[in-house]
Image (cartoon, rainbow, N blue to C red; front, top):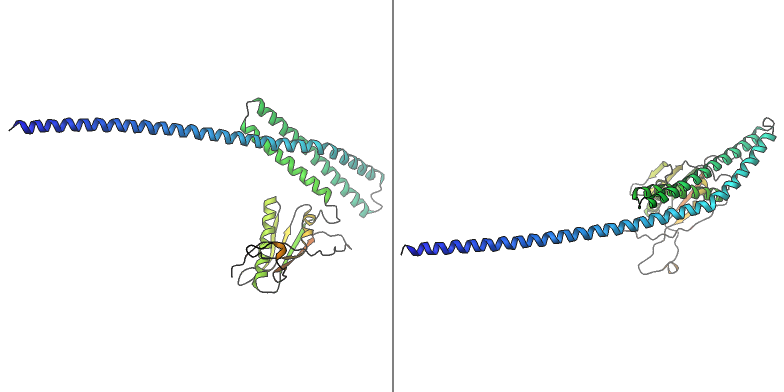
Length: 305
């Protein structure tokens, strides 16, 4: 009778050892499977990152090439024209008696300074384009250096920005286009909706200035008790501010598009509007304001009242 407990105990010990061995084996198998899965996932992630990086390099390279090509096709011709203008302005200064007519003298000197500024900007543009092209070529020679490509891309952004500024300066040729500007916004008189719309226009102009890197500040703002603004004035201090913003002068009307409707199916209403006016900061004496052009701004917005 004493042997039975010993025999049973022996059997229990053997079964426990077998169960532990089986559990250890399964655990090792699970760990091995988990390790394989982790390695596979890591390889998959690395592969995706490599693909994304290659796509990013291709995109950067394409943008760099486009900016350099644009600069090469425009900068040389533009520089020749501006150099000719500068030489002409310098000849006028040499041949003109600056003391006879101070007003005319000042005008001639300002034009000469503008010509010199444009020439220097175009030379800087051409230098940056060559820099972007050279860095891009070096990156390819060194087995695609991502850091060099990023540096070339930043240079190409400067090239594109300078080209945009030059082209815009050729378009904005009005008497006061080069000056700074003030923009006034006045809400309509039909309730709170025009006041909310005027505030949205104010925020739109401020965000635009921030996005473009221009200096704009709100110098006057008449707020309403229930939200919105009755009137506001923003000052913009950068070159060609008036040229950019003079086209905003007019009546900006908010039109609500009901669900499922199209613009030609919606009746125009003037109940939700705001008047916008742009003024140059340094207008010449006797300059007449241009005729106000009334604009309709189509803007989808649903009021929640």
